[in-house]
Length: 399
Image (cartoon, rainbow, N blue to C red; front, side, top):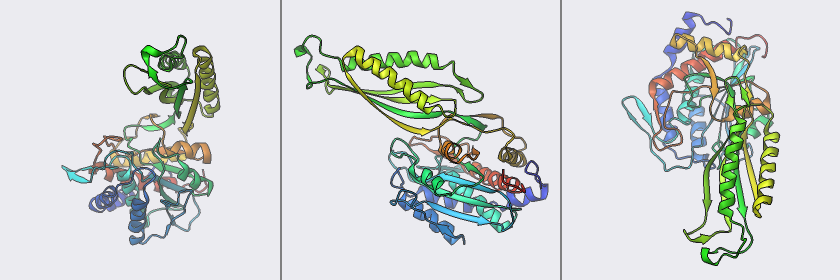
């Protein structure tokens, strides 16, 4: 069987074997346990129990986070061939917990979109491949972990899994992106810039002449970053768009007529060129040094790198396998496009050198209190993942 085609009989076998109620029950079981980033231990245990009850052998590597050991399952056919990895994060953003509910065939609740619903879908895909014995060769590696969502987590767990060799020959990640197949994504760091002056906070009317103005310096920083952003728009790449800088928060002072000693500016810097992180940071550092000298302030900055830019070759075997699966399930392949956010796929490409495709349910409300995922989308993703595995693992050699 070619990775670019699937027989109608096998497609029927796989699509009919996906059990919507079993899939939904799995998703609900994951969503009903709160798991804000750094606190995904209980839901990790729940997923491990679900997989063990299904008859899979479960590994629990610490992966640099003993609070919530990762969940790993290896399914092998015993026949030579590539391994396709299904990877997902079990942690959610730090918002008030919303318990699961199903209304009009839509699953609601914390993590329904991002990404416990998607994890349930690839668990169902794994069940189907095992139960139908349809995987022609190679195997599946399932990994799930904590520490994804920034700024609370720092991706340490997925990076540890990569260091420890828990990687396949390609990886699928079920983030909430279902309308295109992303072949590119921008890298990104979160910045926190702290602008300080000497002394103590004071009433505005008692400011001595020439006292540095940290709020004014913060405003100047925002202005200069705006200028930088316009320059960065000229740095482009196919699908990914252009470089950017964004300010999302400015914080200073305690009262309207106080001269504060600290102004903090938060935002993001994104780039389209793989390997451009150090150059982006050097450019930022030079801008801050010039601003500190011009304003008489002291400026410090922290940079939290979320991932490097990535590019996936359109002729990669995993791309052909996915498009064949998507066509078999829906009748048409997806257009190529860009991944607008940074996910763990950036780490797999940058650190492990394996192609990473982000594709999940067409869900809504990620990073809000209104996450919603149609059950039909969970079923579609499970079907597509199982069929992608069948096509990809039919390759006789590792990609």
